[in-house]
Image (cartoon, rainbow, N blue to C red):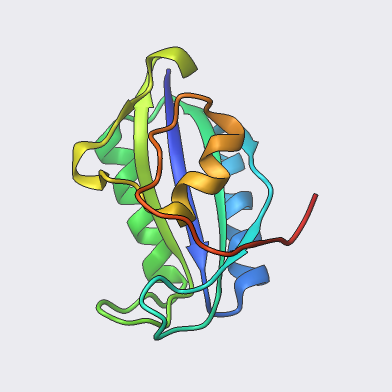
Length: 139
């Protein structure tokens, strides 16, 4: 079993796609979800995002999980490049336990919209390089 820290975001039909992502991940293993945050688009060109984090413990290896997440994005209608994103799902860290999580180097530095929800679940989450305004959508 591997523990993964995931960042999930959506700025198109946000409630639907974040719930869809959560339901799909629950089918893969044990999940712990952060609260959902509403955070402005980093580039200021798209609608505000719903952002959340997940700790997922699953039997899938990194490549299998990454392929699964990208398939969910395609099913949601994700088109790259675009500022209209129904679903974006990224593995940001992985390890055997919460204390051994290692960030995915290609994701560093982590943006605020990933760090804010991740920090609820992972105390040792790398710090964001900047801060942004946010609202908590659910408790």
